[in-house]
Image (cartoon, rainbow, N blue to C red):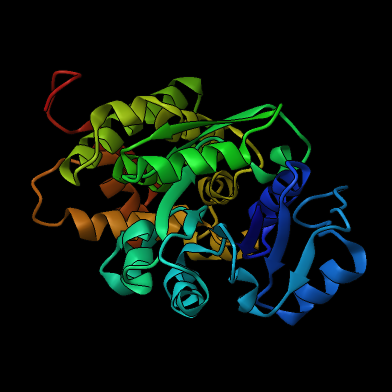
Length: 332
């Protein structure tokens, strides 16, 4: 099958290599000329995927017409660029093209909507949208480390097409119809990874980490149900699975930023020092705005908003969290 990957970050490159190894005709669209030149000259990006050389069969281009005639088009750009990129992509795809969303987060420019909604707004009636999400660090996928993720879409057949195209001996894909829950899990777990990084950076212990992860998944499922997702989704790969890998791995940009903040770095400076998009920082702002007036309790997300955007200290944040009234663990 002819497949185009729109975006040449680490995840886009890892998926390109996977798809080419599965026998597909793969092209990769690059936004920046420097990225294009690096990839055509070296067949890799040592900063993003150390030691990985991409097949000569993968083509690199700065022309988005590479998407024309593709059965699958993969969108692998940062969350802030999904909408603007999709607007350019629209003229190059057909109504039945399967559009696979790898990006995780929210679209601030369109009212903090989920990225599948942003794609739909940009593409109109074109494209059958599938979110591919779950615990999947690009560095490990590029090396063939056993991985399992979820292809989520209301279009069951589109999800199955993605499953068939991506699966191989080390990369397993499950299908799901709850794209809202799957996407929200992939976006909100970045907030919790920031929180865990802050906890570790401040010298708190394993008890705190476990608390943040378990109460985090409870918060994610509560908010997910409010937005139309299914509670059960958050107990799967796109929920707790993605949460675990992002909270515990040094591959995680969100965790690395959190470690610096916990050690005393100002949040905006820590985000800059990571040198790549820290999606949890922006997801915190999005969830804060989406939750306004909802009546849904999101104590960890709101605590993170106060810490990241309102200048609250870590000590003040912890004190306020633990001063909350007692509750049953599984309150509604």
